[in-house]
Amino acid sequence: MDIGVVFQCDPPARRVVELAQQAEAAGFSHVWTFDSHLLWQEPYVIHSQILATTERVIVGPMVTNPGTRDVTVTASTFATLNEMYGNRTICGIGRGDSAVRTLGLKPTSLRELRESVQVIRDLGSGRHATYNGNDVHFPWVSADANLEVWVAAYGPKALALTGEVADGYILQLADPDIAAWMITSVRDAASKAGRDPDAITFCVAAPAYIGDDIAHQREQTRWFGGMVGNHVADIVARYGADGAVPQALTDYIKGRQGYDYSEHGRAGNTHTSFVPDEIVDRFCILGPVEAHLEKLHALRDLGVDQFAVYLQHDDQEHTLAEYGKHVIPAFAS
Figure 1: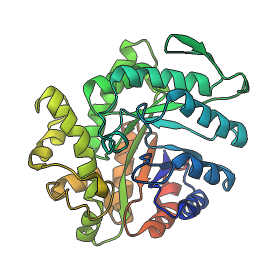
Figure 2: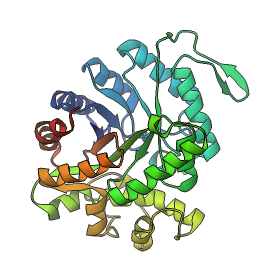
Figure 3: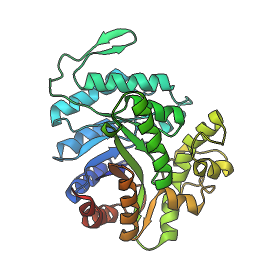
């Protein structure tokens, strides 16, 4: 199982590049960043610098969306980075949360998401694509170009779309029971679409914090339950609280009373008090090294191919080092 890491693009951007270099040195396989242009700095500029100053890591957004970026421009960005640095990018994409909501917009439709996956992947891999009814392509993309598109999803229709068209699936929480349900949904959709379910890469992303002070770790990562709750609230509004997704997801947001995106993804978020300790413990990976290994082994046994560490807390460098020393070697091929 690969181990990746997810950064926010907080200024100074140079610091994000330095952390990415540390991650590669520690053995991390992927470096991901948030993509929310009103809240943080421009990720693709930072990606270019990360790629220029590293040799091995795969770099991409977790996640971009079709609403704030034209998909042909997104595809061109990835294709250009791959031409410069050798097929070392990956596109994580979803319907949109903070990037669109801070503009007063709604997440894009599943139809738009489906089209974006196909257009970005085809153009980024040097193939022709259909966009707005037009045949489009990049004549400058080389024959060996390759770009994978992974979809982040929670709801049943988005999970089905993922199984039908995506190269990979991103689940933003680390609860094995919920992960098993979500992975099965994606696999079933792939089978029904005539695809090989084993051809889909499964990535679980969540905060991870190594240490013994669980109470402190919970307060540093409680924000994550609030972030996940934004997506769950959409699912509940659309499908109701019964049956669409596991009840463990829908039950905990009953006390949710709005959300302030100015504190999105940040430790100490004051709008996530509704998130109980149980959910923090289930969604994140906290505690000593042994607790991380136990949970990650359980996820790997479910078919998870990558765990991506959300590193939005007060112990970033120590977490990178501890994962490099104790966790990554345990999952090396």
